[in-house]
Length: 203
Image 1 (cartoon, rainbow, N blue to C red):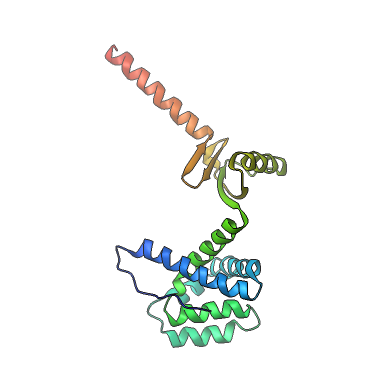
Image 2: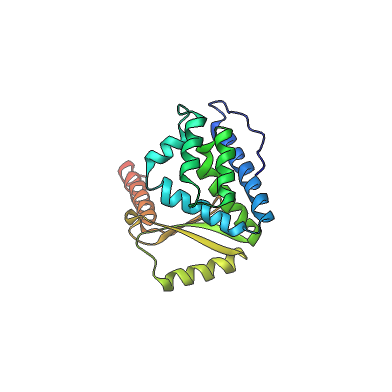
């Protein structure tokens, strides 16, 4: 796998530079996956590593991301653990990241890679926050509505937040559609406070 030109960021640039670096690695991973005709598989495998390994054991993530632990120690551990569990493509990615001291970018690379795949396939990620779990009928209706509205294939990322009380919040890029009961009640409260204030002051 090709290695992007890597430079360490300053504290102030950390967020933006890490994001750009993650995208560079994701693009490099994509090129390798295309050559091996494993584009979707590589994305799924990396996502599974994030959810099944890093999310379930933060000690592993802390070990891989720690700048204190040397590259040789990490290389030895990964060479012992990865064979038989991940593909050659993913082992190549880990080798490059270890060599460049960039294993902390794994989550960002996974997100960037999936975003690239969505763009290539004409899919658009949609964040949906609901008060309760969506039923299959509700999910289907929402997908159909969003598909007609966006003229693209929506990919739902649903999160449940009981504090919404009802309704939902839909976010597509920078656009937010808020139909939650919590927001409606907050708006009502603001209006009532304004009216009460006018009454007290005689306006």
